[in-house]
Image 1 (cartoon, chains in turn green, yellow, brown, red):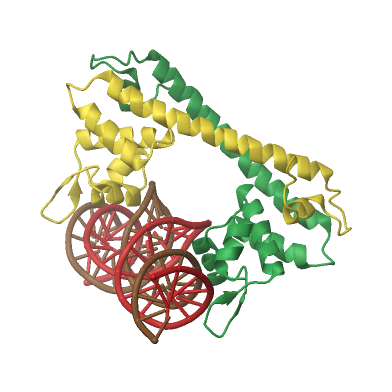
Image 2 (tube, helix red, strand yellow):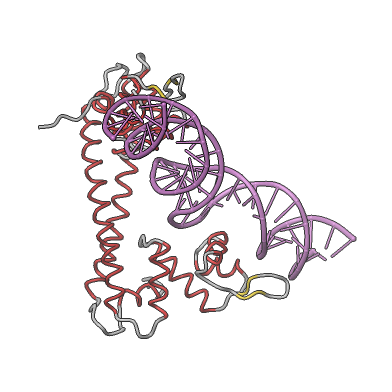
Length: 132
Length: 132
DNA sequence: TCTTGACCTTCCAGTTACTGGAGGCCTTAT
DNA sequence: ATAAGGCCTCCAGTAACTGGAAGGTCAAGA
């Protein structure tokens, strides 16, 4: 399979696949013309990577997960630990974003949004937060 | 004020302030010794930047907000539009993260997390999603 | 056979918003 | 006089790609 085929079948952009080779996540062989030659296993790996990335795992997480996936003797607890750490990070991001959203939507509600220059959004940003 | 003083009073790292100067967000004058000399206005601007960044506005958002802030004639609707666009991005990030969290925590629940090799997390990642 | 267009290759640079470090000058206190 | 600490610039690195230039390859149609 050429890179265009794996791209179509895995859903990953061609550039991304080349990048994944560069950082050692996949190791396709080369044909006599210099083209990368991918096998079904590579395709499988790339699809795995695409799904793990879509779940927000970092590349290094993915590398670890792939290693665990290919290690017949690993315990499921190893995988669970990585997943749990990642879950905690996601939860904390959600928490932070919710706080931002609440503050921001509060400010937006208070802003008239008309032609007048008064704007609570800017006023809030320009004033140090009050400490109680 | 030297950069260390504005850093302490604005809460921004020294490196960050230099970077903000580099990209033109602040323009401190220079003393004869080459040191940056910041005024109260610069401090105010930097604090503004710190708060806007904490709300997740991008640097370019901040640049626009600062320009609006310094423009006496701008309408509050201009600011409100930027804030609303940003709010929509935040909402969508929260949505995506929640979807990730739900999928991931579901997988984690199903994983025994013991010494055995079977792991639903990896199985899911290695299997194309079912289409109904 | 020639040409066209779609693929493929490598390499370089840019993205975001900083952060770390090296090497060196300046200031202040002892 | 010297030592500590603050300040300066410049270079490089981070995460995970993405875009583009310059050029080789392949398959199909005229």
